[in-house]
Image (spheres, rainbow, N blue to C red):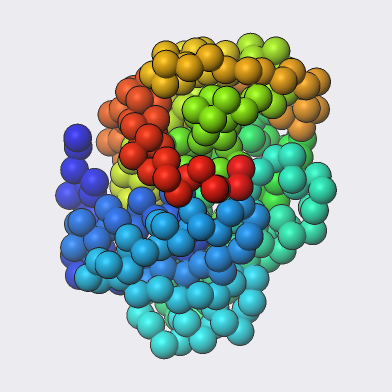
Length: 336
């Protein structure tokens, strides 16, 4: 596995990094790798109940056991909380992984997506410019590429988002550009492609489908299973996120598998084979806010960050299933 940090990173090796969404799937793994590299991490998270908080608690307890980690329960939507945190702590950089995720739920509650993903990003940027923090890494999404020609390249126009979730992420991207232009904040915008792995989000299909197949619960499958995704293993995403701490000016960068997409049906077959159990599938109509396919062009990440994924999706699926089996005793009660 390549080193989690590029040797060219300008940040001091004992610097303190603010990781928002630190109890989240990507945030927790990113925080772990940062500490492995010698950084101190302040993890900010509001521990909301969008999905079962027990999964967030599981990740957070692992972080709290590490030297170099300090947890702050708070919300990036609350400017006074964020402002007080920046006033009391000197940060070398900010990695904003706090977000409302999920395409379908964003149609049910669009306002919270804009306040978290849009207003929350603005709050962080405003505090950064006040305190002179000059490096910002922003998590964005491949959902912005809906309807574009594949493989998706960063220069494609993404002005027609098909969900409030995607629209809120676009708002965060352009606000980050404004603060780059006005205040010289160096910004890496990372468009993630279907991140999966151990301790993943319970609202996403990999963990849900593994759990349901293992228990014999019918899988709710929207569409015929031919829709495909550029699955990217969480460790690779965390490495890429840390590599994006290097100075770039303002750049939008895809972090994805970069391979031919894998269909949902193929993923299910992999789970069945590894678990030795047959899936029971409840077919539902395709959801209009979903994308039929995603596929990342990752040439820019390779050339700019010297990053490329190291874990094949099928190997990643196997690791995810093994983690599920090892943690089956408490996962059985997890709400998905």
